[in-house]
Image (cartoon, helix red, strand yellow):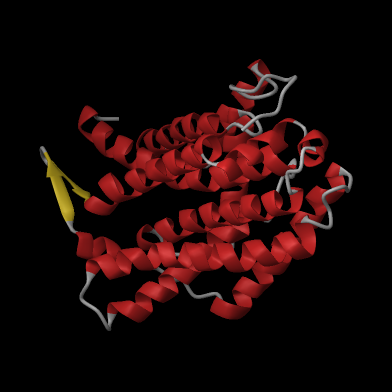
Length: 301
């Protein structure tokens, strides 16, 4: 790969890693707090993307405001998070809390299949995109290379702010500290008066919003088609497995590693693009079976 293309590959990789991290952060949060590997998490990404595209397509012909279109992406994530997160947590996750882990996995897989069918029923098979957001935010020139403001600034900054906000919530707020207590020992935390159902609902809704936000931010730069949720489910599991289950900061580093490596592969060896995330995951797990940042004896977030 030419050195002239390296900055472009890095920007592409960081932007992709930011989306991957948002989805993975929600996935690892649910596991850290509730001990559930949520296979349905990729469906939140798809719903967030489709909803954001629908919002932007509706507003684009009615408003000249770039800010309004950008805020529509966050509105989509909030709507999907509150709707899907609340319904699934109350009807499925809460009732399955004491089930065998394998059965929990199968239940979330069933939920994923149902959500995929609902997605097809609502939006059909035609591609959806919110590219108007990228067009209105313009470009930035660095040297001889022109980048879109959206990919260079907006997506990475949003992912970083989401990470900082989640860390602040977990470490600085009363509800966040109760959430962390649940990760160490659910029964002890409950016996001390912590409302496990409330914590579970808040955790799952936040995680759903993060997954949906990843999809919403992806909508302006890609065409959403059926199967987008499946691809993101597999990739986010690769990030979480590489980092170590329940490791939020580790997921950030793993997402950067996988995102940048994948982007470089696009320019150097396009035929390896799809395989690169899984090659990294396998190499890491051979050396560190519990992931890069996990101590086998403890599960934390």
